[in-house]
Image (cartoon, rainbow, N blue to C red; front, side, top):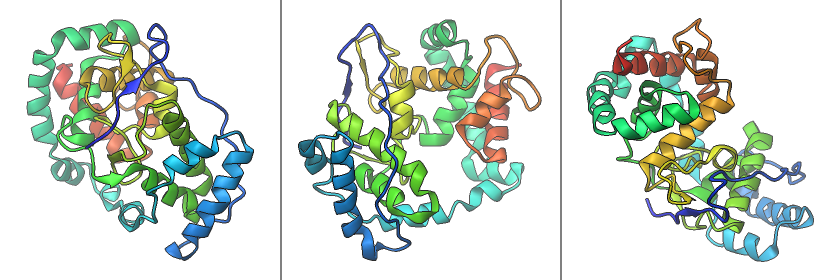
Length: 272
């Protein structure tokens, strides 16, 4: 996946800062027929809310209605599987086996992340493995098209309009290329952050003064730990169902079976 690195203006901060997202006024739709008109309306609205016209022109230069995104959004059947079927479909046993090796090979990194955020290696590796196979496949969909399509689509228009404003912020600040490619819903990098989560939780894990969710496993994993901490993770507390930190895992994905898989895989990797 091709994508610019997220260069931080202030290396000491090592976290991107959010700007308020405006409410949408453009008319949503349930097929591609009205998409081009919606883009025109949205650009006018975004400009009125302070987004630079030059940023809008660059960001939307190659945007089109993305049918694979709609198909993915309508077809998330794996989240309805039983736990055992979900684990088999996602290759849970392989993730556990490889994940133990990843933990050993990156012991210093995971120890640093746990000191900083209180999050142990297991759940981070579980997310990393399930989302992208440890960074081996991060998606091939045009990110701006994916997010724009879902902002236009009536099913979750408000939610993805906020994601689109976040993506525009990333483009404006030079952290996201308008040509970037990622997952079907516009997720970015090795642990698949939506744009708003990059803005809120993107963190520098390797100390080079920049956040690169694609090319730096340290940044992706530190950002994931920062996400979990931001969703209430308590250092030293358990993360299995019924334990304090399971609620933070639930913040990662709304599907119960996915939450259970993160907790189980993480426990097998952490060995407790």
